[in-house]
Image 1 (cartoon, rainbow, N blue to C red):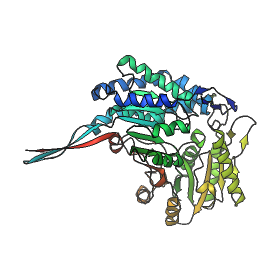
Image 2 (cartoon, one colour; image 1 turned 45 degrees about the vertical axis):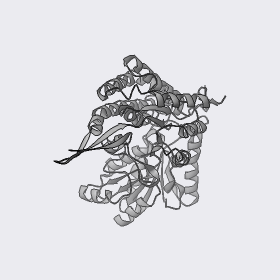
Image 3 (cartoon, helix red, strand yellow; image 1 turned 180 degrees about the vertical axis):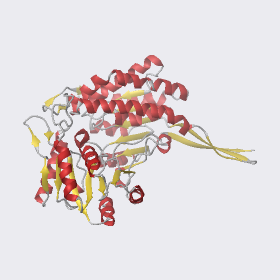
Image 4 (cartoon, rainbow, N blue to C red; image 1 turned 60 degrees about the horizontal axis):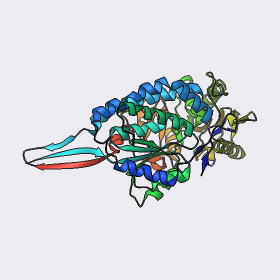
Amino acid sequence: MVLIKPINPSTGEIYGELEETSDSEIRDKVLIAKEDKDWKNVSFEKRAEIISILVNLLAENKESLARVMACEIGKPVKAGKHEIELAGKRILDYCNLTPRFISDEVLFDVAAEKNVMVFEPLGTVAVISPWNAPIFVPLATIIPALLCGNNVIWKPSEYSIFSGLELNKLFDFLKNFGFPKNTFQIIIGAKDVGRKLVESEINMIALTGSVKAGQEIIRNSAEKMHRILLELGGKDPAIVLKDANIEATTKAIVNASTMYTGQVCFGVERVYCDSSIYEEFAARCVEESLKLIVGDPLDEYTDIGPFAVKFQFERVLEHIRDSLEKGASLLCGGEKIGFDGYFMRPGVIVNVNHKMKIMKEETFGPITPIMPFKDIEEAIKLANDSEYGLTASIWTSDLRKGEEIARRIEAGTVEVNRHGMSKAGCPWGGYKKSGIGRIYSKEGIRGFCNIKHVWIAK
């Protein structure tokens, strides 16, 4: 028997403990999911009607869910409630968009023939999700998989398992409205449990996680030839031109660098600023960082809680140490706060370069590294000098110039004068090591289907 013991990151104490799902239980859950066709045979309209009930359930349980996240992963309650609200909106978006994207599509209809593209469920989808957004992120793949008629087996992160169990209760409640009992199942465990699920007789794996986790899934599922969707890490750049609105830009970039204690895949992890405004921009970033309140995640006024896990806290400290040893300068923050828990003041670091880990490896913390550039060509080269390519942003008052630069950046989503969340109906995913496949969009939703070509000779 293996026990999972999540740590409360505010205190460093064990939050609770649970048994991992056994090998035999995993096999049974996969077998049940493969054999059960009840959900597949439900009409799309009925599926959407049942799934949409989750929106009210999330709203009704928002306070309690946010408190569990605060205790388990240190997410401030106001950030947790915001995450839950976003999840509810995204569910409605999926319910509205999915029928349009998976309805039969007539490709050709001429005198001699008719060609139709048909979208059918894959079967069983394994969803493996991370700890940083334990409600929104898993639902981003669970919901379209279900709406497309698949059964789902979900493994939440072992670091946010109690948040996962709370969400699982909401799915259980759907059974009162016709949701089949075997359509959605949860398994509990760490890396080995995830590997056993990946090696099983499922049809698709949808992972949000690290590059290393994605690489392991590719290796472990190769023999089975599973359909794979990977939303992996990022080292997202922001390019600030000299004509940018400094006040608005600094606020937005510091927010995008520090939200959820910087533990978001799409957070700003590198800033390239025109050398003519570099010093002013850095000073403004310091001002904005100092406004942020670090403290108890259960406090409604807290902006930044502790790191969710100790290893992530130590990784950020190591990146800062490496930078300082190589000549960087901390203008503020970047140090541990207190004796208990994994708290850090949000920081701004300058005199950085691409020989430093903080500009090349995923940092995942509330630290804003700023580097000057001489011209646009240098900025684009620096932004593209990465093995990642999830998101990026350009900051300028010249929108035409901003779009021109955006088209040259190697990333799945590039924004002008904003940085952050995805938009429903638009593709979300990465270039290079930031992932394989897309979600949210037509392409993403169709990824949860088998695509059949029906050819009718007249």
